[in-house]
Amino acid sequence: MSDLKQYRMKAASAAELVDAIEARVASGALAPGERLPSVRALAAQVGLSPVTVAAALAELRRRGVVLSEPRRGTRIGQGPPIRSPRAPLPVPPGARDLSRGNPDPQLLPDLAAALARCELPVRLYGEPQALPQLAELAREQLRADGVPGEDLCILSGAMDAIERVLQAHLRPGDRVAVENPGYAALYDLLRAQGLALEPVALDERGMLAGELRSALSRGAVAVVITPRGQNPTGAALDAARASELHGVLREFPRTLLIEDDHLGPVAGSPLHSLLAAGAPPTHWAATRSVAKALGPDLRLAVLAADAQTIARVQGRQQCGPGWVSQILQSLVLSLWREPSVHELVLRASATYSQRREQLLACLKREGVEAHGASGLNVWIPVPEEAQAVGALLQRGWVVAPGAAYRLPGSAPAIRVTTATLTEPEAARFARELAQALAPSLMSRSG
Image (cartoon, rainbow, N blue to C red; front, side, top):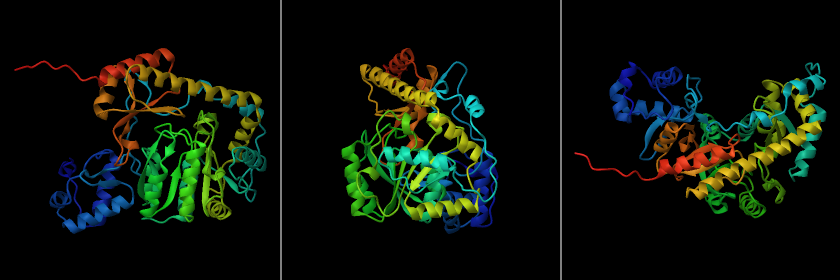
């Protein structure tokens, strides 16, 4: 537990205490996940009343800086919305990094060649936000998957799209049903907007319909669903599960549905959209990013939604950045039109599936439980995350601890990105993980 006296923190009001804690997060003095003292202990340390300290912590919770959970106290969030010197997991020299969720660079198109091919427009103020040819091609792709694409816009990535849809419909304090385990960056985004997370359990076929019904009955007004390539577990909806979930939403027709198809064509499984299972809810949105298929630095995603949602999102976009660079839009259009890129994306999807399945098979042979029906990651339950991560690091493997991806109700696990994992590496990793998880034979010492 943190002793904030070591940081010489002083505050004369709740607002000053908020500023002081945020400043320590920004400087790195308070790290993600670090536990804070109890309200009474913190009040004694900084010279404020417990009521004032409780008010400050409530404001920090509203901003997504701290989390408070039963029996776990209050701690700094894993991804607080404050710039800080936080670094990714360290990768020692010679270690193999399987922690970051990146695609294989060898399976991404050559952007320099694509830029040389495409005609770069001179975009002036007052022109359409979306390049018409790109929008029409996006509509064709969405319709082929059963997703309505009449109303759509172009935004700076899937998370940008989700954030704008949430802002268009929700207010601080609203409850959002999310997958548990789920995408850590989504959790952080929701907390930063002052929204409450309502965890929904899932299996390899995605969200459980009964669990979603319970979450909506408890007051959730929106739900974010990953139809395939779910991060971190790799879950993918099938037609039956999509139909079950759609049936639940029919019972709660005013629920905002957000489908995040962030992996798109490289997910390694077909898309079973709730939007193709029947009439959509009153308000809905579907995102499709190009980041994993074409390159993470291509900050572009297509957002399809009901007409009112699109109108609100585009209106807010006009008030801010105005549009996504049409140079970027033209580059994506050029890539989508290029047959060789289409073939590369198909090869990438097949390769990612093969590498993921190789690791799952190796783990099964070693008697290690693991999950990964689609996508770039495998989710491996472990007794204790820190021990597993540390033991693997000693053997030269860097993996992601599961804590950031879990809400109360989910068990400890680690996430392993398989996008670049070769077959010999998969066999060695599985063997060494099994060794790390095996109970140690301790001799008595005196």
